[in-house]
Image 1: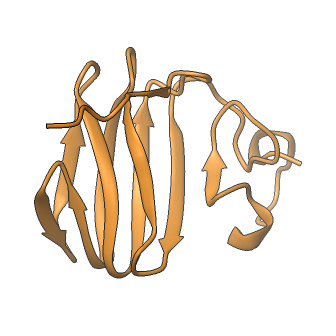
Image 2: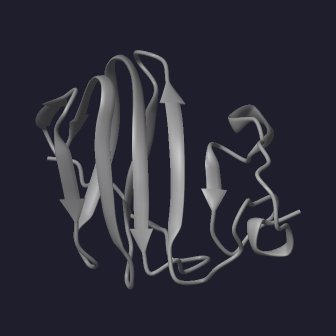
Length: 119
């Protein structure tokens, strides 16, 4: 049940959400909206995500704990990384990490994988 349908305080567990996403136009969610997506994501050292681009959404990533690398640049706890639409990024986890991610607007199917070019 989403927040707007309930008129009292309630709670949920992050592990019951899909990949840490808890606000957006998907299920399950705590607040159904197409205006924004919000997630708290947990990663283990060595994990990575393929280079990708969002054509519409801007992605704000707060490194809440740990250390990651995006486009060859290292980011640590307290850093905020803004990836505007059209900019591609990869994601590598250097130390066990937790990130808080906001995508604005919340656009489903706006993640496009980018082929890595060999040198």
